[in-house]
Image (cartoon, rainbow, N blue to C red; front, top):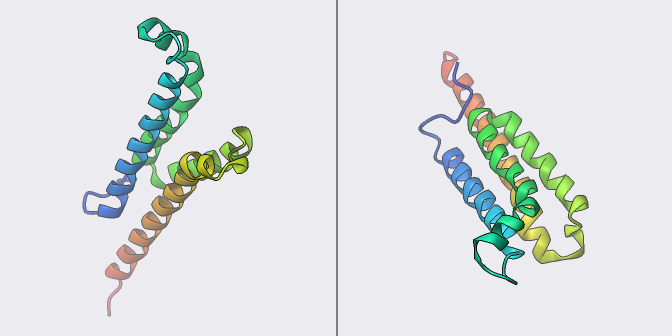
Length: 127
């Protein structure tokens, strides 16, 4: 039994692509944001420790690709945790950019997976 995203699920694949773009963008923003003062590769390398927490969404993207329900649940938990860890509730922009995509995409992926399974169950039942 395949537990990842089915090949014909445009919603699931689209959500995974959006999730990958969002997580890589956050990582690159965190990596390059502290390196603007001195510039160059050395300042990016010096700032790399600040970008390490933003590898979590990239790992969650992989987990979500393999196990949609588990990954969606972890994405929702990451989004809720990021509200308090990064204090995104203080700024609407930070809340929309950092926390909301994780929560919304996690919920979308979980809902889509449950919806696909319920359709498969009804297709298997005789009329």
